[in-house]
Image (cartoon, one colour):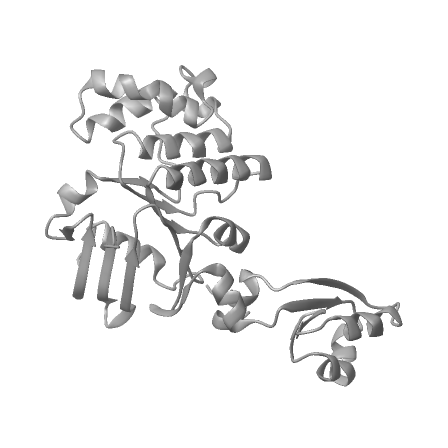
Length: 304
């Protein structure tokens, strides 16, 4: 299958600092692909390079068969973008925001107007058609920003942290809409700091750190490759002291983080049985997940 988005050996540096270091991607039609990484990993720069907003030092980029940045303007006509921060025009109504945005793509007003009812229905905003932007909730604004990205019926949609700051109900609604888009054959490139979001939505994903791609596969394959199948999180003031004498006996691998001990095991039952006898400790037993992979590969330290 030919890639709708293709990136080969991409490099970008600023003031001698490499921020994108040999990135390679091939994303297929109808795929939701996640781009994950700590702050400063190079995600936003990679997106800007792919959209032709900045030029690479070296490497090749193709969107829908068009070379970027050489043909970035033509490529962007086939792309929708949901930016990290909402940039809706507060002076316009919901419908007017869609109308004005469609004009940027050279669409006729009649063509845009014909698309607006379906876009408002898709974003669950039909009842807010004539509302001004300041009257909308955060979730409504985010859904409108998604609808606006679809006004030109794009083949590719870039989503930069689309659910940050939303309540669970709004997040789940946007997740549902994104699944509908991939079912329609749209190709999504998603950045997110929510590992459960990536695990739910992404067919495949890549993890970036310090500009380099350090892992790429399906969420399930990455979990199986990098993490033991079971995790027991041990909590409490005595947890670190307990870990010094007991964790290595029960866990294939463990990490101490503050008052928590993360025990990675193939079989959790012996450890769980042991913890039943320590009332001063609390614990949570769960399957390994994508967040475990992310923290193992990129570390638990804060990134500024």
